Image 1 (cartoon, rainbow, N blue to C red):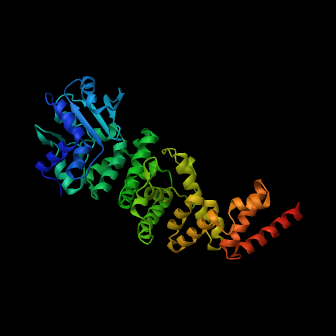
Image 2: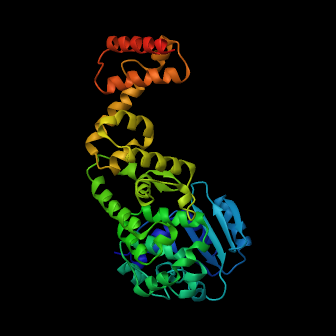
Image 3: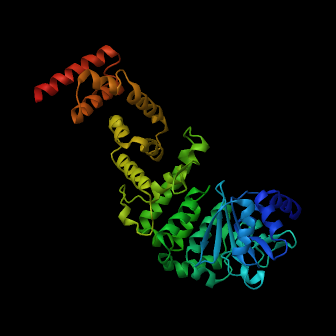
Amino acid sequence: MLLSAEILKEKILKDKFNSIIFRKGRDHNLFLVGGYVRDALRGIRSADRDYVISDDIKNFVKRINKSLNGTVIEFKKRKIIRLFLKNGATIDISKLKGSLKKDLSKRDFTINAIAWSPVCGLVDPYQGIEDLRKGIVRSISEKNITSDPLRMIRAYRFASELNGSIERSTRNLIAIHHAMIVKTSPERITSELFHLLNSNNPVGYLKMSLSDNLLKTILPLSESILKRNIKVLSQLEEGLKKFPLKESLLEKLFSQNLTYKGLLRLEILLSQDGHFSHDLFPNLRLSKRIVKRITMAHKGMKNFNIANLFEIFYEAKESSIDILILKNRAELLKEHARFSRIWKKGLLTSREISQLSKMKGPKLGQLIMEIKKAQFEGKINSRRSAMKLRSAILHNISYQT
């Protein structure tokens, strides 16, 4: 259900930033365009606003920034000035060249070619509102797709966010021009892929992108491996329902605007027979934190054995929960919680073991490891038994040296 024109106007102008900008630009052709309008129609609040104006954009930005006090960045190549506000929101101002219809004709999809102003209300020359109502992602022209191939990935991302579909001719264009995606920077490809992985239902749209040859161009794995990974992804969605994880944790940002739920999906999607190598994916730019997390999770899954839980939890560290989720072993979450308690403060803490043993380096690490492992496996259950084990291990180490 989309908002009515009256409610839409009320919500847009109730926003203090929109109110200031439209007041300052009331003597010019000024329109709010693109994603903000699309989301506002759906009742979703967006932090990023895009405007087009007939005025000189440098002068206009100076005028509005007296009230907004943002940081100004000029993108000369794209002919856009961006204001970064203190609350994290951004405002993009670009010059309106020619008619508004001509400006909107250069946008990617009909649902993003909708404009609004207090004077004109909604301007929708390409029936984007109707497509939005039906959940259809439709390209405006073939030229608009080929001029910026990243738009091909965005089609699946928007379809996923709308829980809708991609119009057939648009999919045909993607299938024809899929190879052009490699002309796009890895940073932009990564950002769009992460948006898709963050969405509520990416599995069907990943299947779609694989069928249209786009996914295997971005991720150079065999089609059979990608099909298998997507199948495992669908199993993950069912498996997550069994885990007592708060939605706030799943939606928490991990790195590069990728949520934790998106990270789990990425760990599966990039798997190659249980292995992971960042070098296999030249079209992606992954942070060191993401690479480390995926590497640890894949190693833990490969070596997973319930008889060696202590070693798995110890080596996997923060990726231990990922492994249990991906292995669909919710019943072992309690074991991980017990491991964490023992490691943090067991029968003997790491500090106590260090002080009592007067050891340093690898030998101290070995001692701590063996005592905590013995407690985890139930071989010791009191400080006295822990002290005895410590003495026995120290004696053995002394004997060996």
